[in-house]
Image 1 (tube, helix red, strand yellow):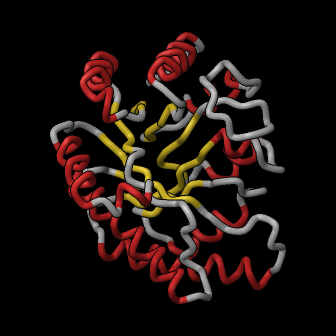
Image 2 (cartoon, one colour):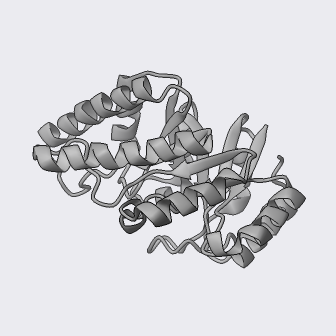
Length: 254
């Protein structure tokens, strides 16, 4: 079974809810990785309370700006843990099924010691979060990773059924590794997928069909996967509808 998701916009929530019910989709909240909102107690409470009324199957994107669980600077590491727990607390309050965090490692730092440290220290962080938040699945998303090696090492080291992968296929398209390799190597870890389109140049979050990614192939691979959620991660509601119609017309099976 697959569950399609969209990003709700707080100023369009009523219209988004109507679309959700019409298409039988879910939401992925993209509000709570924004530091200014997390630091505004009044606005944060209002946003959480607005989404509390939503119900249904929902996921949430965790913090990622400047997050570094593997930092050697204790102040930075402690701040990263604090921000992560803020969004984990919000996820728990909203009853979200899954939360997404980015890999956030330095791509050009080709030191084996750094890579080893990144895996080990991130594993410690996620094991701690999994112990504290036992009712939510935590997902690690490939950001601008050159390949899938380190993310698989991290998943293997944590080795927990509630720690899975969010495969961002558009991000994979920007890497040194083909989309087919990403899917082949990572599919056993994948619980959640982000999709949009680009021209293999920048992370443009285009509507599906507006770039040059091979979505006939991608759809055929998605149809082989069971028990996953898929976020159509585009810039606005019209692009979501365009992408949804494209996927269904090309044979995506829900």
